[in-house]
Length: 397
Figure 1: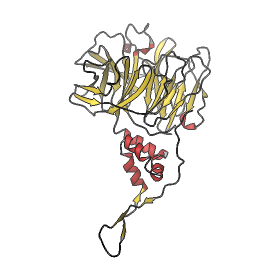
Figure 2 (figure 1 turned 120 degrees about the horizontal axis):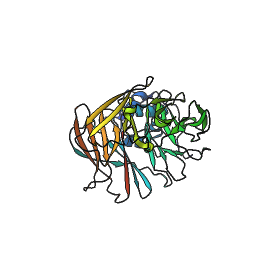
Figure 3 (figure 1 turned 135 degrees about the vertical axis):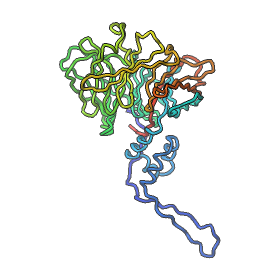
Figure 4 (figure 1 turned 180 degrees about the horizontal axis):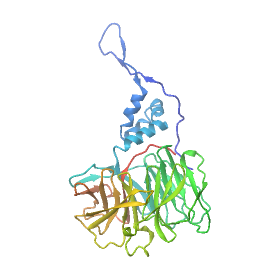
């Protein structure tokens, strides 16, 4: 485990006093004192500052370090970060991984050019980078073919841990977050098809020991690969799988570590999906509900079909069809923002060395293009992945 040095926590004074000297010339200098500033007010002020300013203030003094490092402040900063989401980019160039972000416009109504800034945290070159997912500011990195252990890192603080080895030869891991207990957990799937019940493993980041624990699943499923993406919504982790030769969505309760599954309607699949590789399922957060888009088999590239889970208990989905003003050819489906815009991204730079992201507001039926600068240092062999509603987290692991 690799960790940055952390200062030990000490009790905070209930009040801080600010002292100023009276500048008026007088034979008897008088020192004036202002009223004490309660620490809880200081914490509220600090939590509203930017990530860069807060990280810098941690180094101003021991007292400020004590205020800005405790878990309660980290949780408050994360809560405020939800009100200022960002667009997050992972950039792979020459087998090296870089992180960028930019403020995410809320309901953008006109085309514009923004600048993505780089997180100047340094990570080892051996990090895997084929698959990346983000949950509440932490990032899970995995490799497809290389024998590299998965890594969880915080792009803000530069802190990271390399996950311990598991016995299974081939496996996939998923990162989830329990908002009730404020815990991050990693679910590692066992690929064996011959165990009944099937045994998987879970690791809790906040435990400190970072050890795998075995958990049981009452049904056997084949994990469907990571190309379709997974999503964690209100403490439930969702990902695609096959159960008894049919497609399902597996749901994992992060808090109680229990498995369930949701059936997929036949109308949600194209005629090619029986033979299609598993990456055709694109899962995303649809205004607090599970959303799904089928990314294979549809030839009409202007019609955009989304499915929304209305009732998990009865496996009820609703269908939503939209007509986009542009074709989805050579565009990645990124997901949906919390304010209701469908987001697509380009495959590559355009002729002006800008990376383009498209926002489509479903209610207003308005289409907006955002061009991002900041990646000019990468000339060739570059891959950019885009994530919306990214929140900055000051958590140390």
